[in-house]
Image (tube, rainbow, N blue to C red; front, side, top):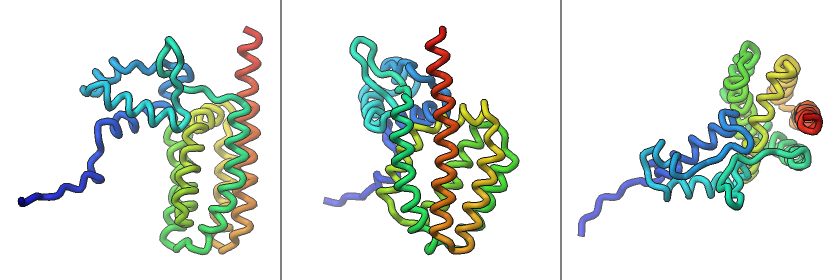
Length: 226
């Protein structure tokens, strides 16, 4: 029997397409905490059956972006202060290790790419493209490590935080401080200083942690006085 193979790994399934679209809407803040995710409505939007939608929602739930509630179905998951603290504790440990592993493997081309992203960050003020560039900057540097499991786990952690970081940046005008820290991290990487890059990365994460914690505490206090 003659059979022509097809590389299905290069073709997105319906569930993958729905997953990526919903994930994007959640991490950019287009969908808010508690927003319902009704399977019938999503299926109609993507012109598909409920099966790929259900599979996509399961993947989102595994990443902590969606929660299934009794009588309400799937909703966008909110982030508590305790959740944020735990995720940042994870980032302190893992990103320091990954950047140390990455620095010796960084090429001039990779550093130039990261530098171009850094310059784009310096002039961007819109939280949505700024957030995308911010993730691209860190992903470019950390990606040199080749530690795929660590990188995937960090990506999931950032998905949980991303929409809050973007909102916090908009409210606190934290772009300039973050851009200065990015330049310092990049300079340490270019100098081959792995420990220095790790220390600066931890300090950078700490600043984001404290700003976001204050932002989440403010939201909590606002609800308490309403």
